[in-house]
Image 1 (spheres, one colour):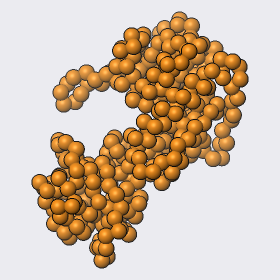
Image 2 (tube, rainbow, N blue to C red):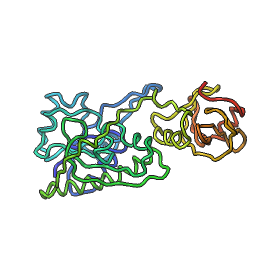
Image 3 (spheres, rainbow, N blue to C red):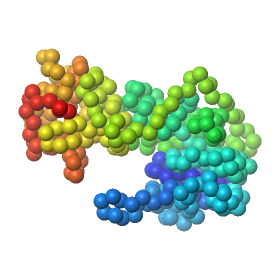
Amino acid sequence: MKIIFLGTPNFAKTVLEGILNSCHKVVAVVAQPDKVNARGGKTQFSPVKQFALEKELRIFQFDKISQKENCDILRSLTADIMVTSAYGQILSREVLDLTKGGVINVHGSLLPKYRGASPVQCAILNGETEIGITIMKTELSVDSGDMILKRSIILSDENACEAMEKLAVIGAEALVTALNLIEKGEAVFTPQNESEATFCKKISKEQAHLSFNQTAEKAVNFIRAMAYAPSAYIKTRHGNLKILKAKASTFEANGAPFGTVVRADKRGVLVMCLDFPIELLSVQGEGGKVMAGADYFRGRPVNEGERFNE
């Protein structure tokens, strides 16, 4: 089939690569407009755009895909179907009807759970051990369309970025299978159970402030969910500190208040939560590089009994 692909980040790049390795043909790629780096002022291409350039694919970058002139351009390509994967714009009815096959989407959750912009992060926040992707037909309501295929994986301690990489691989495989079924007229479209639907919004930088006023397990899950964007952070006397990886500890802290440093030595730093401490394994200071927690605090010492986030 002739496909118009809509996507922007690394997740979508992996999905696009899967289509290119199949029998289907990508006639155009649509990605979000380029961004300008706030520090260096350099133009940044999205992973999908960069990959499409390398593969010499036709690329469009619309500020608003739903504008009539943009719809006319895409309609003129006479594609059979459109595929979206983390594209980043809401599609109008006119866009959904541009091709005979409509639009199908690779969504990063086991629908109807976790509809919306941050399904993997929210799943990890909630302590889910099984996550997955759903290939679904796109409708006007967010992630509400009929489902074609689901695939799942079991998590251990992966963070959101690592989980997304795994989901992108199985998502690409499932998408190609779904396209094959659609082409043969064998796809089964299953309605979602609305009573089981849950929703998740995009997570902001402000929401990434790590509280120690929770169990160690929940604090570690929070850190996993936020890595590496927007990244969990805490406030220290050395400035804000991103926490990229941590693990729960059974260290006896003798009832220390949450947020208290209960061990600070060459092995690293332990910070008390409501039940147990967590060890700060990988961190990044303001304007600095990612470092092992023990190395960071060797250069910026903290004292046992000191409290973070005060």
